Structure formats: C-alpha cells, structure tokens
Image (cartoon, rainbow, N blue to C red; front, side):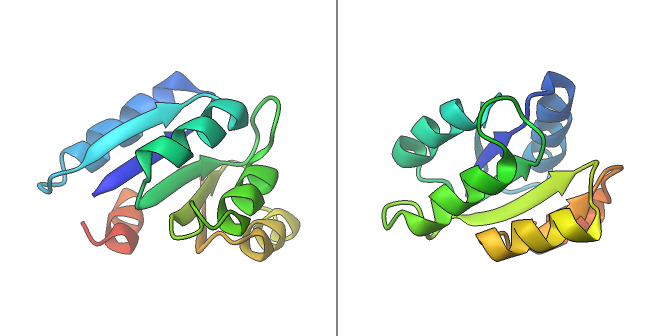
Length: 118
C-alpha cells in the first residue's frame, strides 16, 4: 500500500507515519508539507491513499482534493481528510471535492486504520 501524508505540521506527519507504518502491513509512505509539493508527489508516487490536512499554506486541502480527484492520472487515490476544523461546512466541502471521509483532530487512530483496511 502506498500512502501520501499531506500536512504542514511535521509532528502530525511523524505521528501518522508511525501509526500507519506500525500497522503490520507493507506500507510505503511519502509526505508533503503543502499542496504544491503534494500535487507533484501524487503524480509520481501514485498513492493508494492520500491523508490530507485541510488548512495548509498555498493550496488548501479542498482545492488539492478536487485537483487529485479530477485528474485522470490521480483520481483513483482514496482521499481521507484529517482536520482540526471539522465543521459541517468544511466536511461538506471536502466530501463534495471527492474526499471519502473527513476525520477530526484529535484523531481516532483505530477508525483511520479501519478505513484504510489496516
């Protein structure tokens, strides 16, 4: 399984890497700190899952999700949004942009792993 973690907080990237990497499956993980870097990485890394933060500098999570899901080369990536701003409006925007799930922070790690099949 290939996972791209997109979050401008390095602590979150490290924590998610540890949780997903320790799930007992063979998982390849890449990370990006903003939407611009993620846009480049999603094309060559071809992730199965993109774990996407909403609030980032440059391109926000909603715009990045929409770009991933409307590009024929990347549309198969399953997007899971993870945000500290899980308001009904933000959740609606993320889901309408193509995210499968929108999980709030603090994160329920068991739910994330279950969604990912880990």
